[in-house]
Image (cartoon, rainbow, N blue to C red; front, side):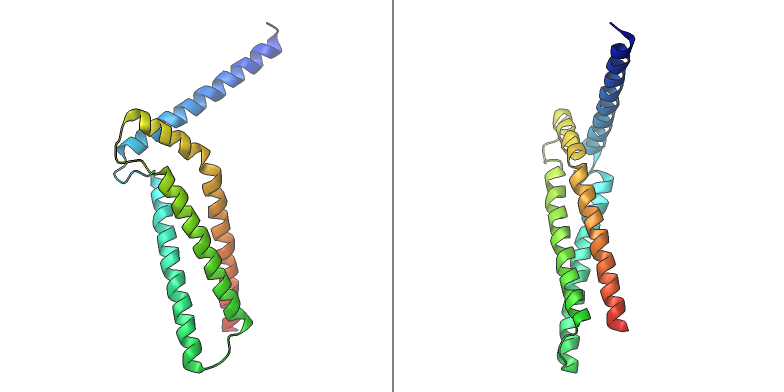
Length: 149
């Protein structure tokens, strides 16, 4: 075997071993998790629930405020509504994905490993949704600041 091929094979073996170690580590954490979610997923789950609750309260408050002062909604108010709806949509989708990554009630070592692989594969979707939430939050912040001005 030529040296370059041997180097490539060694690199592939190292990548596989690294991936296997990560899967076993996440599988162990999932197996021992009381709620069936990894710690970072549990935090995201709670944050998503809080985002939905706060956005719903903000929209309700804005609607009541608009009725009290009896004025038409401004462009900033409409943007606040759209940003809240977009954040709720992304947060709801994130909750659905995290529910799929949750460990089923029957815990077993092999189930934990399968869920760990799902968590590693689903990491890109979760990261994308986290970034989308950040973008929508910045959009909401801007709309709130404009409405105050």
